[in-house]
Image (cartoon, rainbow, N blue to C red; front, side, top):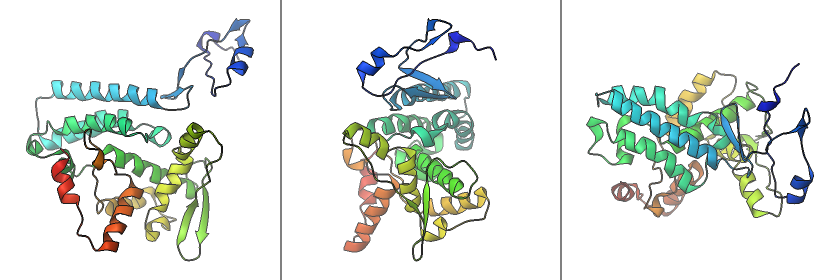
Length: 280
């Protein structure tokens, strides 16, 4: 097989500068150029092992496509813009999100702002704030959609529909099917944070949040699981983070369920209404 050496790219992980400087990779006696970011099957891999560069890239692509849609189509009808949003913009913001799903508030709000700005142009809901627009348009926040994709992928792994990337399942005699969540090893905090927020740790955490009847749903089609998952998600508050309101930054499924459990424990009626008025 003949290979094109001009297309070779080298990316190095880790902070061992001595090792980096003492190793050299060549092809046909020509050194392969070091890169900080390498695009692999549509995802930008970075030498710092984060996906910040990729998230910035897809945010730019999402803004560009969103602007093109609003410039090209004069209609501001809800059904029209929702169809254009789902078919043209969302695929650019969600491709392979199980791998790169952000955990930093700044990155979450950067992506969420694209949908927030787009839905504000829909005529029927212009007078509503973002949380209310999502409810009226029957849309998930981008944060909730990414969590949904992670849950779906874990379920497919457990059903042997896709290759297993290291998910371990335990069948509890009372609690049903649960994913084993590995302990985070290592003494370097940065590495621990990256590991904690990777798919092999975040996916099982999200899957274990599901009620037992959903976790135990097996031997059925992905469409059936999706319908049951969506029915459950519709009953949960979806209040994505908004810049300037640090108290509104708790929207992950584990946090939402913990908050509901606390409210049930103290007999509270909930504070969703007041938060809804604050975060616009």
